[in-house]
Image (cartoon, rainbow, N blue to C red; front, side):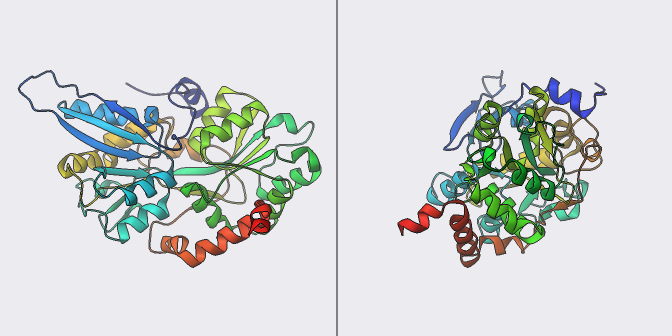
Length: 366
């Protein structure tokens, strides 16, 4: 079926898919097999993911249409919890790990937890979207800022980080406790995006100071932050995943999503197969689907996640993303440099300056 709608209209049409991020502490969903042949033995594919189950379900459906005897047991949680659960439960690991926390995924793969798989679909996706046939990027997603425009009055919507700072200064105490951020100590994706800001943004230090001065509110998941934005509990949400925020924007006209014009960070959701996966064959088939033209087409047309392939067409494709106002796209590289973010000394430094600015009361308690 031909899809002709543009991104804005289709975001409205697909807004029923999911207007929230993954559950914070874990939620299990069973997708029953489509098996109608009693003699065909049922198998179970176990997937851990930091993506809402309604967003990923079109891919699960396509997989089960190809392998009707497979049930899918999906555990949905936030990025930090998935990582910690993976390490703390060695006897209960999934067949596939999905997460946008690229640094945590890379560390697990580099530490030997990933099964190498030379998927026949690798030639169909960009060379820089996979690493050593162990870690596979399958989406291309902007990190954005969202604003409840009730705070603007007659002022223009800020388009860059510098303009955002100017807005915060002009509103001053009206924004006390009205700015929302990911708690970088609880959210793996939040930490990654903030650490990358530290490398790329000239306004990093001033943003940190402004967020601290105005007692920014901390969140562990996208859903809570967007809900707070909707209800006026906060007026600015910084460093959100674009897929969820744009859906919110289309549903509620007073919520606006911005890809900062100074630069727009791009993250990839990545997947790997654990070495001790119980169903490695089923897992390999799922990786093949993720990277295949069919899987990438599903992302571009049904999931609201922008696919990694620039060749597929659809309302959520990279072509449509490029048509929206944005800055220079700066993808976080999928390579050894990610290990810098997971280095203990580096993390302690980032956490320390974060706590000193955002949570000074923790410093006083020590």
